Image 1: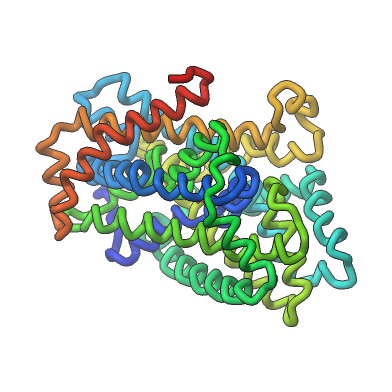
Image 2 (image 1 turned 45 degrees about the vertical axis):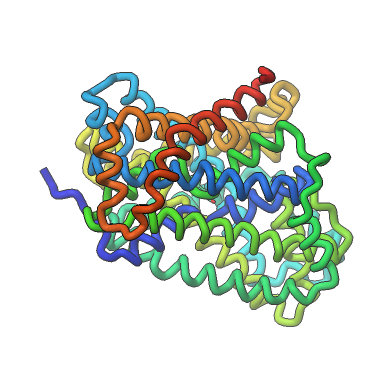
Length: 451
Ligand code: PHE
């Protein structure tokens, strides 16, 4: 059997994992969901959930992957003495990644579209309202959305086809630092806008009266989503780790980076919202509608706008790569396929699955969907995966690592290569008790069962 590929360097692994974590979740989903949920209190909960639940589970996932040296399905199976039930959890992870990638690619396709529109200076001569309407036109043009969704999937397939070192690691080492640099540059710009103070208040002042039970579940889902945790991605990346890599430190670094990017993105977007009298509750179009309005006011629109959307594209690409890699790695292991076959089959299947999401805004497919589900197809998949499937997956990982894997194994894996041994008891407590109980309570509440 071919030897399992491993990361070429520690920094390559950090950038690849940070690249998976930092993406649409921080730059697109976090700001708009924060806007819909009233700001500060939601952000505070998100911070708490990230530290107390998502990061401990993240560390658990890395441990599980490194121990098994396999991807989700085989990892669950091998580490549980071939239990069929746990193996199914691996498949559940794959299904979640598949569904997320299908709609993630649609949003990423919008990003490709905006990058090119920036180059053609689409905001020139338009009023603010007209600039905002461009997004509605895009979202309701089914054919254009499908086209960009296709192009984006091609890009993703191209990188994943290259494998771990030459594909994922190589590109992440370039794209992730570039993304951070561009974001900081834009944030500095936003600091000088008149709405900056109001934005800071909106994001940091917790008004709990604005928080609903739905918001609590969303905050939990968001902490999982932005860290890519709970669906076997981090597990797969962990399986490419060597035995002396420092897992706890990696967990903390990536957690802090993803938090920082979410907050920075919001501190860039909300000043614009408030400076131009826009509404924070704009929904999925928030970033695409507000930022071009700002760019249009600045000198150098073409450059700034293009740079920003390229950043956005990098961020989504490194995340999409990780989502596709989970499908590919599992298919290779379970069916002994070669990389090429696994990449083509999973890329094509994801493209097809994404078509109804791409057509959601135009109403050309499943036109009456929202009358039944309250959200269009795209929104349904977004909520189903982000608010339900990821927390459930995270809960199962916490239970598996915390209770099934055996204390000896996890203590050994936690301590190998780290100086942070003192954190072990805290981590164990969070993983074994706090994470499962908190996820369980939040999910129950949302199901309408009040305790
Ligand atoms: N963490 C990614 C982001 O913030 C999204 C993602 C979710 C990526 C799940 C992989 C898996 O955009």
